[in-house]
Image 1: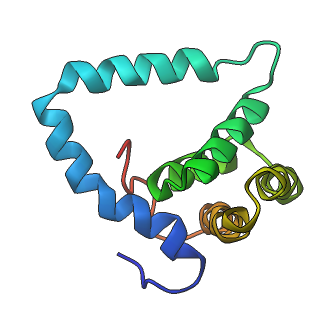
Image 2: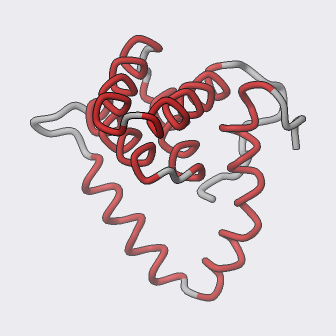
Image 3: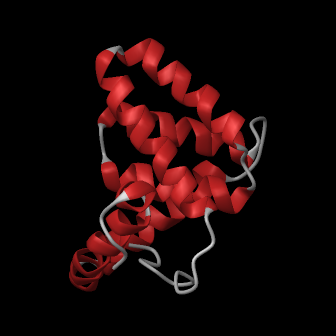
Length: 131
């Protein structure tokens, strides 16, 4: 696991920490995880909204729910889908508008997570894969 300082502590490190626990639970209830994966795939499929717009909505909900694992997962997905820092920042601005003070805490955490996955690292190709 990378050091728990800087941007990684809200992105890569969160997913690495949750991965073993997620795998253990998934082993016991694989049908639930499979159904959730199918739901996620259907909900995130491009349609009237682009894949990036849908992922920005998911990140905003993760921020509003103050779910660090969700924030890290959706931040990683935004990087993979090609979202820009500006797009993420604007979505987080709406979080701050709607949440007030907690948005000023979890918004920056989400932005740090996004930057964590935007920064190349040598050994993160499969980290926390589908945690």
